[in-house]
Structure formats: structure tokens, C-alpha cells
Length: 244
Image 1: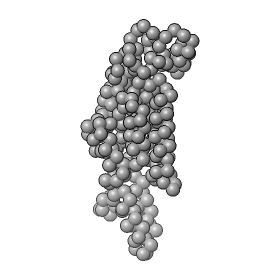
Image 2: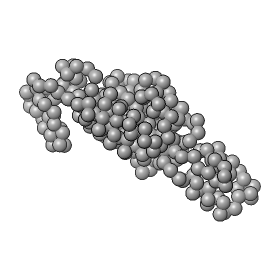
Image 3: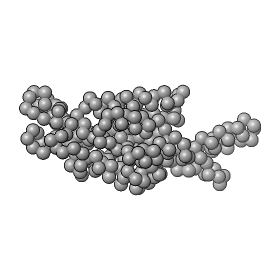
Image 4: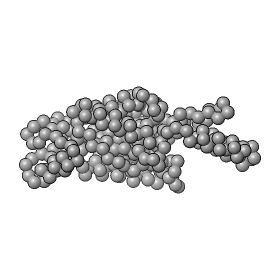
């Protein structure tokens, strides 16, 4: 994080003119304060989050965003959360790929237009992480990505089921008359259990690993399962790293 005198947010909040005062008042109205001009200032750290009830991959990000917030505060920064578009491969049709660039634009322009000194971006489903990578590289602010992990592996009749392939195989068997209505309903119950990204080496996990390799995520973050207690620890550390 830059030295206090170099904080990007100083362009919005520093000085004694009416514009700077109004910017500081806007933060105060939201219950957020930081020392004014001539005193040590706290870096403003954005927390972007794609959590949505329409996206089971990303629903668990709400609690991780809270952990990021704790980390930012512990490091002396001021956390500022904001929602961004949630891209779900499960429900979005015809494909979430149509909206990847839209999310990238949304995040990049939010960073450019707001008094933020850094960001922690939370996302999990397939197109969210690549959208973040595009946006963060262009915005060129101190940034980290926090992912939500993969969902538990369901078991049906003693067989472990992966995302996608198992469903397509069962659907072929269903069309062939080999799967009864009752078994089809049991499959629905199995595949609908748990939140998190696909539990195979698909796009979501691959992109999480890529973010970690590129230095946009903390070591070990990409391979943690959804709900792993270590996720909250890593999320809080990501907040500390950006809030310093």
C-alpha cells in the first residue's frame, strides 16, 4: 500500500475546499470516518462481492466478505463494501460468458470513479474470476481476489458424483429408460446439496488456481473447499494485506 501522502483517495478527501468537505461528509453519513487533512489518513479499501441467492457458487462469499472487512480494519484501513454483478453458470442463460466483459467493465469503472486505494474482490463461479483479473489488471490498484471454494462431492448409491459429467451421464441413462422417476428425483437432491463452485477441475477451480499463480490470491486459497474454516482465515489475511 502506498505511503499516506501518496494515497489515491487523498485526491477526493484531502484539502479544505467544499468538494473535499462534501466527500468526507458523504463517508460520515454512512457511518464511516477517517482523520482529515494534515493527519494520518486510513487507506480506503473496496470489497467487491458477487454473493447472490441466484448463484449457489457464490452464496458463501457473504461470510468471507465479513472476514475481509475484519482484516482491513485490523490493518488500519477503512473497508468499503459494494455489490457487483453475479455470474451464475447454473441459472444464467444462454451462458454467463455473455456477461464476463460486463462484469469486468463494472468493476474497473467502479474502481476508477471512486476514492479507493486498493481492493479485495470476492467471486467464485466460472466467469467471475477472469472478469476480476481483467478489471484489476486494467485498474492497476493494489488488489487481491478471494474465492469461495468448491462444493461438497455428493454420493448417490455409493458413487461419488462430480459436477456436469455425472448429470449428463444420468440424463443419457434416463432417456434410455434406465433411470426411474424416483431415482431422477434422488439425483436432484444430491446435486442440489451444498454451495460452492463445481467440484471438478473445471473453469472455476482452474481460474482460482490461475489467480493464485499470478499473485492475485494468497497461497493455498484456490484449493480450499467451500466452508473450510481455513477460508475465513485466508479472507481475513487478504483484508489485512490490502488494508496496511
